[in-house]
Amino acid sequence: MSETIDVLFARYGASYRWLVAVTVLLGMTSAVVTTTTVNVAIPDIMGTFGMGQDRAQWVSTGALAGTTVAMLLNAWMITRFGPRRTFLGALSVFVAALMVAGSSPNDSVLIFARVAQGAVAGLLQPLAIYTLYRVFPADQKGKAMGLFGITVILGPALGPTLGGILIEHFNWRYVFFIAMPVAAAAMLLGSMFMPEREESAPRTNFDWTAFALLSLALACLLTGLSGGQRAGWNSDYILSLLAVAVAAGVAFVARELRSQQPLVALRALANPQFAAASAVACIFGAGLFGSVYLVPLFVQTVQGFTPLAAGLLLMPAGLVLGLFLPISGYLTDRLSPRWLIIGGLLCFCVSSYWMGGVDVNTPFWSLAWWIVVGRVGLGLINPSLNVAALRALRPELLGQGAGMINFFRQLGGAFGVNLLSVALDRRTSFHSDALTSLQVAGNSATAELVRAIERALSQAGASPDLQLQGAMHFLGRVVQSQAYTLAFRDCFLIVALVFALALLPAWIIGRTQSGVSRLAAGAPA
Image 1: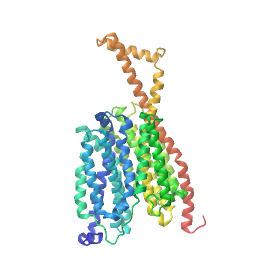
Image 2: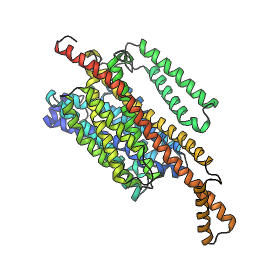
Image 3: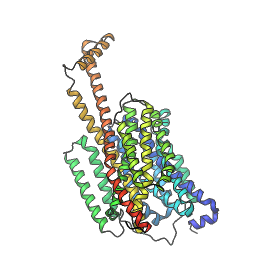
Image 4: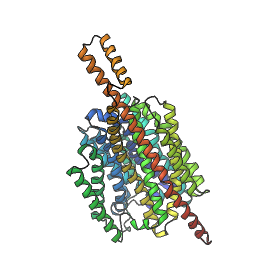
């Protein structure tokens, strides 16, 4: 007999909903924590494989891109194979990908494993929501979604700190190995408590052509953007990648608009308020994942923080976000989404603007406070954005609309990390050239620095030739370090500017939402 939800409830009673909740949330935790834990390991990974920042960002971008695309597979896999097989299959792939990543001999293998890990996370997130929604009654669905939200927050809150501890006492490879026992435990529980496919459930078709077109477009576009600085923006390789990305993207959009069962409900974007909410969701993802990528990289490469200190820096912000989400949900039921979204955007904009003034001497607790302010902003945005977006849609589009908001959030995260990495490289080159052009004999500060280094080397017994070479080498290091710091400042200011521009679509959501609310109440709009 198939172990459907009804059969499992009859076997375990009312406690079954908590058994299956622990199961799916344990699987979710293993995937989400790994996604954020690896960010504090990026400087160590760069050192191990001798790769630059433009290549290293794929460790984060690859996982986010995999998550974005794999989310589209979830509904088909549940109806085709059932929740249990989907859950166990995804976690099997996840454990294998963790093993490959932890023992990877080069950066290409590591990036491939990270894409696979992200794909599993993309399957598990909607699967967890689906399962919790099925097993909890109507009066407890809010509690179930709260459990899901807390699990998602555990990643940004505890992941970087856990990664820092592992790197401090072992090495970066244990960031992947540590999640394997948790995933294995989730698989064991899943084999007992996850429901199987109901025989009466219809088997839906999946548009593999559209899926391949979207995957090709994202892969070529992200690869072209990340490789442009290294290979040259006018090179045949980069131009070919971008051309293929545009062609695949246009073909995907054309196919989706003609499809009766599209992977991404692009027709919903004809609704102005939903389109505005999707734009804010994309920016929300870029800010969240972009900042989680940039901050650990800055404090480790510029300020010399250990991985543990970098993880501890992010922990207060993650905990504040977790504590603030219930408050934000309470406010969402009582205030206009317009003001909550605008307030959240302003908080993150101010936080990023403050981060635009960082340097090597910025205190730990100043950085922690600035990040906390940004996370308060994200906490204000998330619940109110979901509510505002879905209230704007017709009932038959609600399911697709919820998926699209998550899709655009993940898509924004992938492009946010990718484009911020490109901006960091370009601005570093710009500032390096600008500062180098100032290092001339007539620059009194430069001349004094060179003489001071030469005196120090002379006192150490170095020959005159070595004194000059050592002074020039030190000057070059100073210039490069300052250029890198200025580039980070520029990137944080870019994030602040983008969040400021997002106030326009947020205002559109607010204007239309008031009309929607009046119509729902039966009053004239």
